[in-house]
Length: 418
Picture: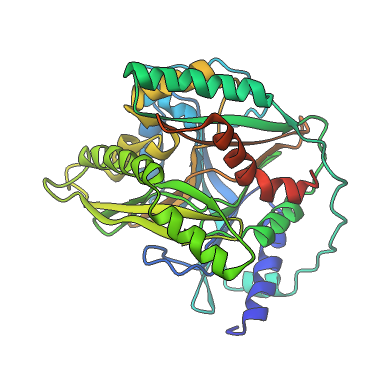
């Protein structure tokens, strides 16, 4: 199955095959070369065991769940677990109703690496089942009418108010987000995800189905991964649009690399991540492996830094996730004060948005993304939502930040026909 066309055909069939189950998860690197990914893509289908909980002691429950099953588990952490890690609350409306934490042990698990499929859980015959699986491409639903939760003026006023907090010294930086949504929305989740993944292929893409709730993600960002005893985080801060003209595109890339404002945003989050990793690290092992790396995706160039450490053997790896959650790139600095202001100025509960989706292996390795550039959908409530945001600093221009939000939303709006 080395042929690239065969691989993408197998991948498509496998996703449609997995979608027959009430619970499934598909994580795809979209062929981005990444030193930390264990597989090119991985598909988990069916649930042998499930854990669903609200903020309270959910990380401890996950630890017990993992110890009980000693098996691959797939799942997600919602942003609102901040209320468990810190003395915080969430009081905004939540129209999606996802659990704060959900994990499952799959009935079937297929991983793909270097042109070969490997069955990690289940009978080898499922590869034949996938290969012969027939699905009829349905016509994608008509264009969805998307509404913005905040008007442009409201957004600008809130950004200006947040800049006042920065001027007063309450915070240095805050990640401020706004919601785009549709009521009475009917979509075909698999085909919507396929369209999104085609328009915007990214290294941490994912399709997650839990009964009537769906996460369709084209995220370019890794929250945290563990390989052996090494933890690695890759926060994104810094965005620039792409150009179809190769010369101009290269110039934009160089401009982003040398942009003082973007570097300032990035370095603040790098410092925050270093601080978060220190809580779980062997003494003196926190390292910045790459600062201000520029990576290109179909819609945008991004500034990404890489920070790593050796896990302190006395710290359980699930506590290492808890110690770094929620990710600094989606909160701000200082972290707790930034999260209090996020609650004050945003108007929608974040839920899964700016949370994390991923998996843990039987030997305690894991990889989790940051849920951005993602469509969240409750099929029963027919409610569709996605959020976009950016880092607000002293240098921020509210109008430019608004334009950046629209740039980040462009792939999803294109897919939904907006």
